[in-house]
Length: 179
Image 1 (cartoon, rainbow, N blue to C red):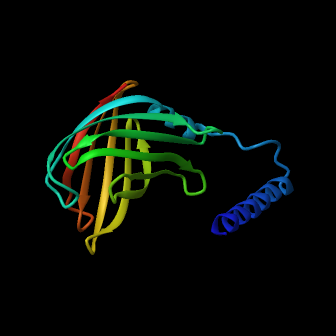
Image 2 (image 1 turned 30 degrees about the horizontal axis):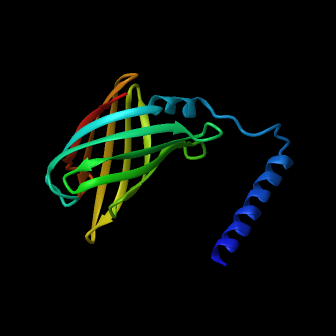
């Protein structure tokens, strides 16, 4: 019943959006802009490794994985699926990266087979992408930022940092990946 209800709501929202688009006189479906095209940097099959630092998010140790990132139909979002292993055992994850033209920010949503999930907004400056989020972890407010530096079309390095005050940052993970 819930599934049917969600489907009806989704259909109604879609029809409203299509009706508004038709009322505005747009011709054909929307097309990705240059901000969407910038996400092309993430497309491909990546092999990564990183070093986790001691943190509330888990024990220290090495992580390795593969990740395949592909354009979702329409060219507005990149969907990435990953699997590997880390200090807590086998890992599987999925993430979606896109661009919100209304807010003029990149968006990231990711989940994995642990209790971790993140919803972040990002920006790009040259070859450096920065995604930031806020979360509550173990009853405490935590700021998080993930910085990716594109070294070449087939190589990137990254770091994940967290803060309890939004000013002093602690390194949680750093590594790189290649395709």
